[in-house]
Structures are given as C-alpha cells and as structure tokens.
Length: 293
Image (cartoon, rainbow, N blue to C red; front, side, top):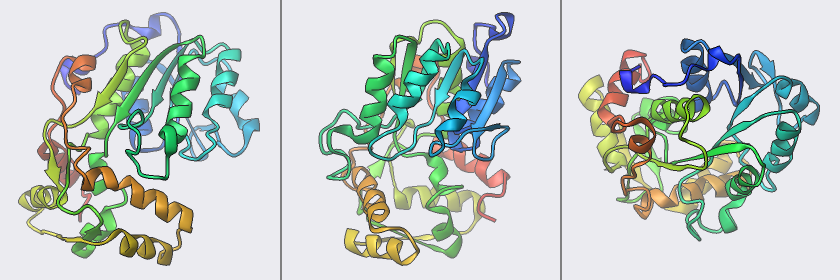
C-alpha cells in the first residue's frame, strides 16, 4: 500500500462497521484486506465469507446488515436487479453510507449492445443508491486487469491461446487494487459523497499488447486469436453456459472491440490523488503470486 492509499479519517475512533458484499470476489476481498489493515471493523459477506450472504436468499440479508454503518456493494449482474430491494433494507437497518460497484458505460446507450438496454442492472443499482437517502459513492470501472490473472482469460493464457471477439480494439484495463483503494477511501474518508468515479488504467492496450506484457515477465507468450462473436458465443455454450449467459459475455466484449474502453479516465486520480497502476505493475505482482504458473 502506498502512502497516498492511507485514508485520512480513522473510522475505528467512531466504532463504525463496514459490510462488504461480495467480500470474496476480485474487488471485495481486496477491499476487506485494506479496511482491516486500517483497523476498521469489517465483515466479508458472501456465500463463502465469514458473514453469510446470498443474493438469492433474502433471509440472509438482514442478519448481514445488522449493526453495519457502511456497505461496499458488489451487485448481482442480473435483470431485474435485486440491488434496489437490498438498498431499501440497508437504509432501514441503519446503514448511513453506500459505495456501489457499477460499470463503465452504464450511462452510454448501446454500450453493451442489446443485452443491457438503458444501462441494465447497473443503472437500476445506481438509481437506487442515489435515491436512498444515505450518503453514496458510485464506482464505474472498466474491464479489470485481473481478468488475465484470475478471471475469464486465465485458462486460455495458460493453454497458450486466447481466443476472443475483441478484434484489434483496446482498453485501459483497470487494476482491481485501484478499485479497492477507491472503495476504501469512499468508505472511510470525507469528501467522496455524491461522487461518480470513472475508473481506468493509465493507458490503453489491445489484448495482444497485454499478452506481450505478460510474456516480458514470464518468458512465455500466449497467442491472441481474434474470433467472430458467433464463434465465441457457441464456444461458451459448449463449455456449459446458458445461451443467455453466453450472449451477455459476448456483448460485454464489445466495448473492447470498439475501443470504447480505451479512453483514460481521471477517477483514480480524483479519488486518491495519484495516477492509476500501470498494466506492467499488475503483471509483475500477478507473476510474483504465480498467476500464470
């Protein structure tokens, strides 16, 4: 953790408790770790976390919320979204601050193709926190760098060939560590209420460029193979995904192919007072942790 990541407000002095929904996920577990390093009373909530939480089982919601003062909310990416109902319960339970993980492009018509009209479940979640009556902050990250190390791209990289419908497009992939740092700042500092942080990395790269960065560190390069959307979608179905899930994943790739994810945004700098982490920093750390072994 860099000095600029250390928050200015000591929440332990007020005895506040933070609930992290999705506490075992990419951004959630990093947020939990940072909060606990700061001495903040933190609950990691998920189906496998230390606090039981299941989006599909609403009986788990209220016990998880009991006594929580602030919530980092990683939503369920389905429509209709359960986020509005959860937000209503959270405020009724006494939660005073909500930090929502949304998505880049939620306010851009057609950003994700036909899958998410009018912003889909992320737009529903944003509307809910804005009208909740609680203090709120919205995070809109683009594609995570960690998809190459612990996400949907990892198996292809390990197999030596990453086939995606991304064409020659590019994206300013954002490090999940930066997303977590912004989440912690919004949960524990003053000055973030009512802010919408568009989060990206410091430069745009194509899929092949990221694979080059990985090769520089690991010595092994996976090949990038551009494929048609229909081929990619059929492959996902063959792997066991439903047709609906396959369409969602395929449409999610579209902003990379069209380079809508390429523009660099200022959210990390505005929230933390420093530039975002570069893809080279991410690759170095992920390699040290054995991501591509």
